[in-house]
Amino acid sequence: MYYSVRGEVIHLSAGVAVVECGGVGYKCLTTMNTQKNLRIGDEAMLFTHLNVREDAMELFGFSTQEELATFKTLIGVSGVGPKVALAILSALTPQQISMAVATGDVKTITLAQGVGKKLAQRIILELKDKFKLGDGEIVSQGSGAAQAVDTGNIAKAIEALGVLGYSAADVSPFITTLDSSLPVEKLIGETLKMMGRG
Image (cartoon, rainbow, N blue to C red):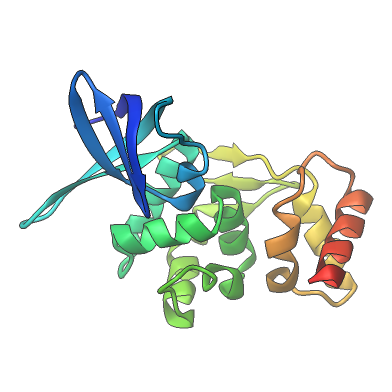
């Protein structure tokens, strides 16, 4: 029903952003990652999803179409409601979620508040066909046509780190924060440095 809202951000609180459009304030439930991009008094555009229940209508807003698409994919998993999907997208970026699903990384998904091991395993099981590792990138099968989620050399670096004895679960939280266009050797070096500091 609502594709997006654009206007002045008039209120921010934990998990909530209110955007005023034409004199009407739209309360959008949102992620911490989206909220990082918002400032009270600034203009913003949020891509939205309207969730209708028997007792409520809730509007969810996201700063990117990629985040919205990942949200819609997550709520398609049995046992994952909108609130859980928001928690996952607050803890992880869409790229980190794609990588975790593609590599079967339960540990990374459980970083989200309220997501236990069993639910993380179900998410991976139900979405593994939608996020597959291709040639150095993750191929998402969502919305009919396949889309490439650019991970550059990250998949190759994770594979190389696996040879060194590191699991995808160990390295994903670090390597997915790096620029995917970096050379494989640089990605490996930077990941090992961050893991050493951690």
